[in-house]
Image (cartoon, rainbow, N blue to C red; front, side, top):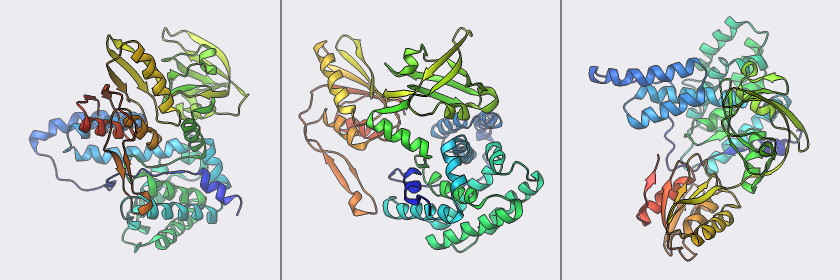
Length: 455
């Protein structure tokens, strides 16, 4: 098999060790709401479905998450949330050249071997017992959704008959529902059977089917788990190291809008004059409106030393034409460190990486010289990162006791992190989000008079 070990390593499995992974069934029955609840249901659903119709999957996910958090009784919103997550996962992967190249170059046997590796890691590392039948249902749901997405269809079924595809899509679940799937071997046999059906009935390459089952086996375990493409995996690892090859921008990509959220200090984008809130309209001659924001964002990737030509729309609607060279960019963990008001410092941490502790130490020493007595730690939009870095930061504010513990089915994953360093004696205030960030938020809330702002 061609470089199978490298292929498996690159197709990283982002498995979050969540305390609970109550995976919902995509399409389920629910009790009809009472008359007093109908009005409350109508608006969130209508707004969410409007975003779905526009294929704005990220915004729909955020909308449904907020709606369900505000009112857990909105069961249809919960179901739509799961469906939107699947749509987003499919479009994310099929806007990524590295993923499509992997699918194209994989034989069915190689793809099934990757599935074997995925299932093995779930058995060893995931905190709950794996339900192989449920994983089969999840994979089937991913395949059904993929067969409605234009990116997937254009890639694999450009010349296939639309009615034949739809007939297969609406009946493929019959090959899985009720089937005996109690272990990994029975799941792999089912996936191989569906892949063969798809090949015979609609001409879909088996490896494309198998990779939908791979993604589905991970993507609906919980809100934090996903299959990373090789390109995404490289970027995550680079960011953890504190550097990456690229332009040095943080982007929001949705629909036909590709917006610059932030520009890294000292990076090629900043040197070229790019700024937050600009919209990228064209990448190397390709219109973002025509190819979509996610594909356009993927075109920004490239080897060190290569260049990309961009047309940007400024906040005053004027256009800017610029060529930016891709270079190694230092990604700061601390993006802002300043005095918010007399006695109160403000530090924004964008992610937890290997350089986080050193950057925070430097920032806090400078702020202390300026009279800081308490500090606001802004973790909003922080996607998480290294648990060790989050623990090290929490250790700055305490003198003794447990910080956080991890527990898994594999005893080697059981760890208890305790305080070691002398506390700084500074009261922390947190603006928090989720994931690794919760190690900070929950711990400091329990151990200190810490005010937490945000979800």
